[in-house]
Length: 125
Image (cartoon, rainbow, N blue to C red; front, side):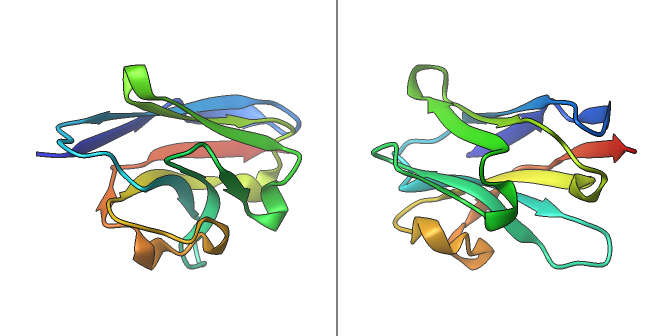
């Protein structure tokens, strides 16, 4: 059974950095895409960044130049490196996988069929 376990969240001051990780287990197939999403109170879940099977990446406009998504296939781990965090980045961050296909640039949560439990990020001013 597939499982995604996200970690690395925490409390940081504005301008700080965080490294999020998402370990995948139980997969018997290669996923087409993996991505990070976030849920901010009062807002719909939104895409942050995605990475395809070939390593292509896509980022939300608010995240460009502030973060890097990467993966280590040997460790079955997805990463998100956040720099220059802002208070408005506070929220729950989820990793997700799309088994068959996705359009990376859309960062559409409806294209992802398996989700991890989330890790909380809190940025103070």
